[in-house]
Image 1 (spheres, rainbow, N blue to C red):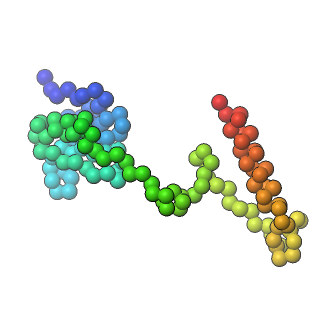
Image 2: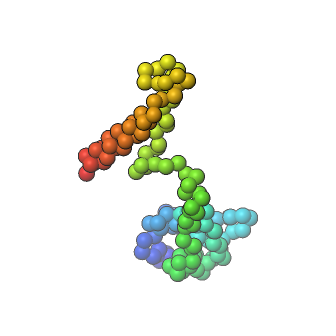
Image 3: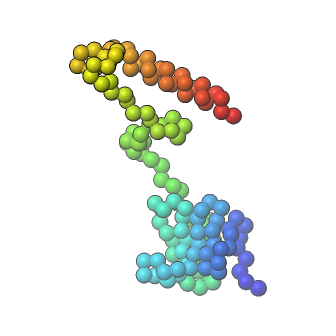
Length: 135
């Protein structure tokens, strides 16, 4: 009888097991080394290697069960500030630039004071109404 993968793991082949979280245990060559490798779902994390034997495979499963994979890195405040602001996964709308001589624009092509704020408030109100309609 062959190896039985622990609960939460799907056996894709004799050399590939995939966990519900997306982590993988695979026998392969990685960085010129053959063995069983515990590959995290978050590719920013380190891959852990084990011997290319049945014992190495068992050690990889044990390492996963013991939580040897580091938790995903959290974004630093500077990285969050650099990311574009979104509302519930939507991309921010580009700011409208009035054309020269367009209605409602003062000389020089700039919008009258307060118009931009009113437009933003209107868009936010529309977004809130859309969100209220969603189940």
